[in-house]
Image (cartoon, rainbow, N blue to C red; front, side):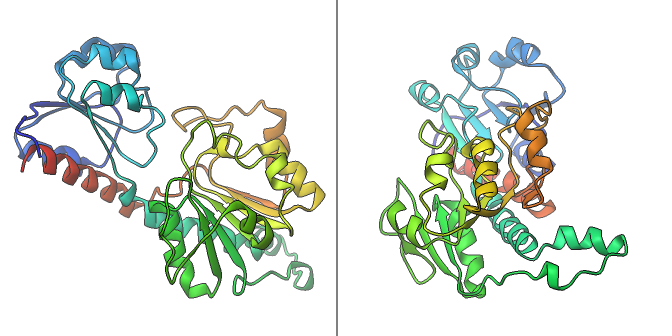
Length: 317
């Protein structure tokens, strides 16, 4: 809790209007800067006590140095990779994010994509619409009895484990920063056991030096049996070329990718000229979606609501 009051907040990205409405009810002036360029924002940012962002701009040293009055940065979502966290904290800034808001949506999409891939649902839908009726050729696989390895056991990873419980799978998890989280839903594990037991691997880690290309040629070759891979975290967690090679070799049975390494920093555009990208979109054993895990009507509201509650607890209580 802080005695400092906030007077003026800049909304650099669009978020659910609930957040702006609640701040205004607490006598905070809120300005929508979502259509302004980065240069225009930097030119006026010194007037604001707080900023609300998603992924459009970087809150780096240059930005923070211009924001002389800044007290907090609120990120609608989980990832903080577009914020210079260490420098911001060294300047006394409070950093808020809201991973609680979209953890259910992420977990549900991960399961939905996996079930679709394992049962060829996208493929057979297209076939039936074109008058093709193949049953034997499209026999699928059940989740029951499989071992699901969750990499990163935070909000998203633990939400996935909770929702997998009804499928009668065995869930094991590895988290570099956590210990003692094992319970009836999940067994705390390590890479050695994951390589040996996993049928399915789901990534729920941020972007950091040790998670860039986390799933690459070296790691994908160490599993004792072919796996399915799910990535709803960040595109650069997976080396796409290495993944496609692993699919060709049979080391990976298929992949569910909601995020791609070809995305721009704001997640709004793709670098489609990449040779690997063209190879990816022609791979039938990969299911793709446009970075929408966590992007539901319900989560859109909850992301804003959790942010407001965190801001309010610090400045309005």
